Amino acid sequence: MSRASLSSLLKKTFGYSTFRPLQEEIIADALAGEDVFALLPTGGGKSLCFQLPALVREGLTVVISPLIALMKDQVDGLQASGVPATFLNSTLSVEETKLRYRGLYRGEYKLLYIAPERLMLPGFVDRLPELNVQQVAVDEAHCISEWGHDFRPEYRQLAELRPHLPGVPYMALTATATMRVREDIVNLLQLKEARCYTASFNRPNLTYRIIPKEKPSEQVLKWIKSRPEECGIVYCQSRKTTEAVAEKLRSGGVAAMPYHAGLDPAVRERTQNEFLRDKIRVVCATVAFGMGVHKPNVRFVVHFDLPKNIEGYYQETGRAGRDGLPGECILLFSSADAIKQRAFIEEKTDPEEQRISREQLQQMIHYAESGDCRRASLLDYFGETFSTIPCGGCDNCLEPRERFDGTMAAQKFLSCIFRLRQASRFGVGLNHVIEVITGAATEKIKRWGHDQLSTYGIGKEHSRSEWQEIGRELIRMGYCLQTAERMSTLDLSSEGMAWLKARQPLTLTRPLRTHGRALRQRIEGDIVCDERLFAELRTLRRTLADERNVPPYIIFPDVTLRHLAARQPASLEEFAEIPGVGERKLNDFGAAFLAAVVSWKARR
Image 1 (spheres, one colour):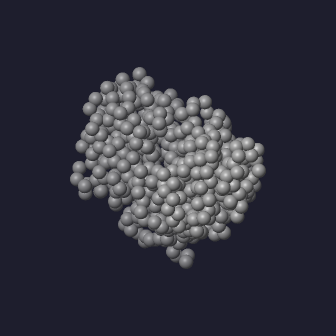
Image 2 (tube, rainbow, N blue to C red):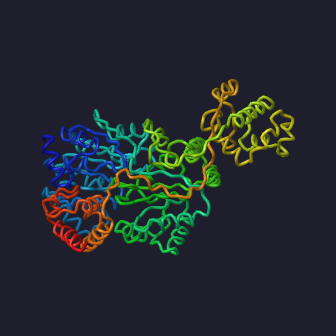
Image 3 (tube, helix red, strand yellow):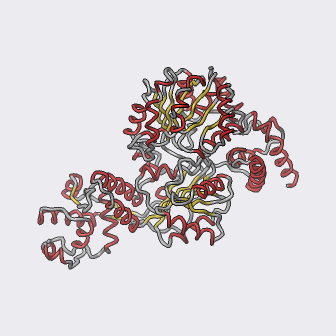
């Protein structure tokens, strides 16, 4: 199919005039019958990569999806755009299931969404060749790898699918995967000479900010109340905390509900549906809430507690701003949270798992405490270099932390580590180094003779907490090394030893402070429009969505409404040029929204 024809089909069906990065190349390979692996960030348009080829081909595209809610959401959206799609899962009655089976055998559908365990049932998988399957798309493909953050054993069954559909091309898609997970996906799904695509992990419309944790429930309530029209997710470490934070928000007038694995499934489903339909504004959740949430207008993600690792943090923050409009990512941080996380790690029984968890936690702490660009730090974790600094979208770039001449402090701290190792021939932890340098009279210091060292008591000009900050920054800078063992110890690195000998000037960063103003300068992805008209269009959208029993964004996403409120079309022809307005939606909803715009203009 020609490039012009694909673009025409994209506009006619989904209402967009241009492809997102890598979409066109992936679609071309899929239509050429190639196996494809695609790693695209959340909000990067993964679904279109298999949906558009499905419309071009004769026959059926089978989409393997891990979550029931996600299936229904995708199918509702496709049907609203005029695409014949369906799903099979346990929510359907026997009669409805039979009707959909009949439709599949008659070739009435272009896409079938199905869970792996349902797909691999002997009674179904053996009949797949009769359904004229032309492509298999494995969504959330990282679930197949034991090294992935959302490993699902049922995904392993997919390794047995290929012999049932010889010659049918596969597409594997995920939003986040390390190199090891990528290799697992390709090998376990038996992708043949796969064409591999990896987009940038950068989410330019997201702003990242770390806030010192002080009275966190009040901090979160105040922050959310300052955004009365926005919805979001507050991630908490424990079930108890989700319920406490949700109650605090409700008592403050914010429509919020908890979500965790300990709740009755019916309660969880109701909470998720009400969130998707904008009936509640905030979900306070454990990490059990996330992968199936395809809500494009989540405007903020707050981490009430410290995440376990950067990969999980990146994925969870990625649920903000899926529609490309601005999203804010807030992390409340305190050293006490880090201590709690370390205690949880000590409960693990596998020593290797403990070691890996400690390393991951240390990376997360370094990220939270660092004065460097947050975006650059995140991308560096995934092996991507980001050089546009300041990025304009994180606290450290928008409000740079105060710097100071730390040459003398670094000399004292590193010298103390050197003298301790020289005197005792064994390593000590960060706290012990600080106790020696501040002249503490502990039993250990006396027993080991560390009060006799030349560095004993030489750092009384700084408090213990200030030395904690100095020490952790020197670790981040690579001047000293911290082991990932249960009783972690410090040692000088070769870089630290070289610097100590050279005694060159060194600049350090002041610790995090609570900033008075919110970071609202970020405009990447924003669409300036009349906010009053936008509010009226949202109300109309909600009415139409309730009539059809679907989430509001199935009618039109916020991006389309903001374009409408900005351009204010005067005819259906002009309305058709708005991004997100395809042929079917123009016919179904164009007149109603156009009338609302015309009426609003007449009242001005």
